[in-house]
Length: 273
Ligand code: HEM
Image (cartoon, rainbow, N blue to C red; front, side, top):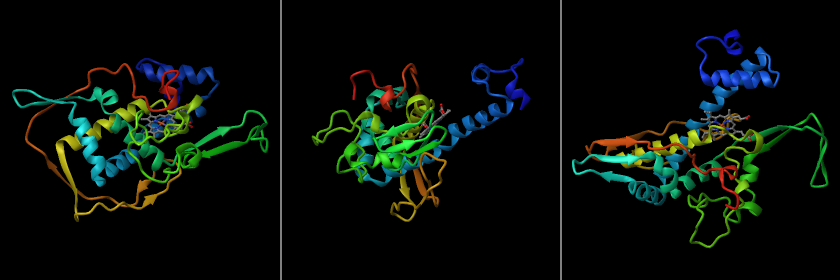
């Protein structure tokens, strides 16, 4: 643990920065160790279950699958030599349906609970007194299923729900109603990284492979509702057959990374909803 707290030769930029940040907030070695563990856990535990539900939902619903495949297929260029090239950086702007499906996964299947320490006595809605020093736990499922925010279809999975322009004429939810990556002061700093890697995985999977369930039918697995994840774990494995769609060669690029995916209210420019 001493190595974590001390900045010595061989420390990398990131850990140096965190160490400076931790000292500025008066964290001692033990506190620093706790936050380091939290950082590692936060960076790992949420990506796999959320990716699972995204892939499952897209593969199991042929309408969602077709739309996602059509959209991501537009990013592929086939060279005269037969090599398929895709620039995954273009998913952010070129695949609104994929991005919307990802957000709907976190809304529909998400189970994160926001925790906040109450800094001062606060009266909410003129009736609930939150006492200083207490902890408020706010399950996102409550916010994500509130009909006053999401409308009467809140209980249905709608992969197009987050599109900015929708043909069905329904009113769009307020941007801040989506809490998939939390929000405010402790908004998830890994959201762009996680969104980029999960969508890249989905895009390459559906472009390059036919995936079919062993047994012939997609059956939704029961959920293991663990409290410390952003999405539940599936209670059992889903066995699939992966068949390459062709023997074409692929060139996979990531051309720029200066902007993340617009995923939560805080990412939107002023005036956007
Ligand atoms: C799909 C994957 C992920 C999901 C759904 C997710 C979701 C969340 C949520 C809901 C929070 C709590 C925010 C709040 O209380 O308002 C959070 C915090 C955090 N996440 Fe993520 N996360 C993901 C991936 C990652 C990755 C890949 C990293 C790091 C590389 C990361 C690092 C963190 C950290 C450090 C915090 C704490 C922020 C703070 O307290 O200031 N997360 N995440």
